[in-house]
Image 1 (cartoon, rainbow, N blue to C red):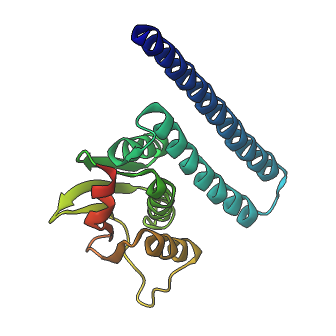
Image 2 (cartoon, rainbow, N blue to C red):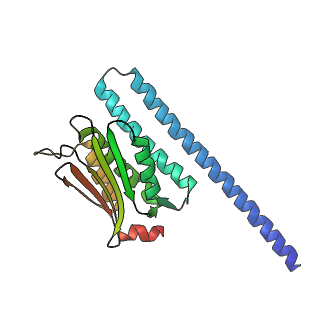
Length: 213
């Protein structure tokens, strides 16, 4: 009798696991399709626009959508309960590679909880986009992306060798988004001239890492 009960319980558990796997696959499929649809609509709209400023704004939004898509891909490829930050940064650098701007990365292995994945990815995407678009007067230069654990905290740095911050620097919309996302993450954000270029640093608290481990 006990063997029969055990086999029946195992059968029910296997069925539940199969249903959960199927549901997770369906969610993955739908989210991926929705993100691809949004990206396609942005590309189509951009092609219909004659105003360069509008096309640039649409390209910026497309970059944000693609950053979320990379997060989604990483979560479903790896552990859905934690987000591999180093792998995401490598994906982002690879996607942005090519052209006159050379991108380099030096990243330690680190993870954050799933809830922090999207805001962190969007913040890093904004900083990298900002550097690529505004750091270099002639469109050529290099950007170094770093990820390190220091004193129990997670530090993400984006440093360029470009023109540096203007004397009367005022945050634009993109940096405003970064500061808003950092408040959501309870992270610190610093940006300063590095002579040459600009060095931007995001520092995540230890509690974020502990909850991902």
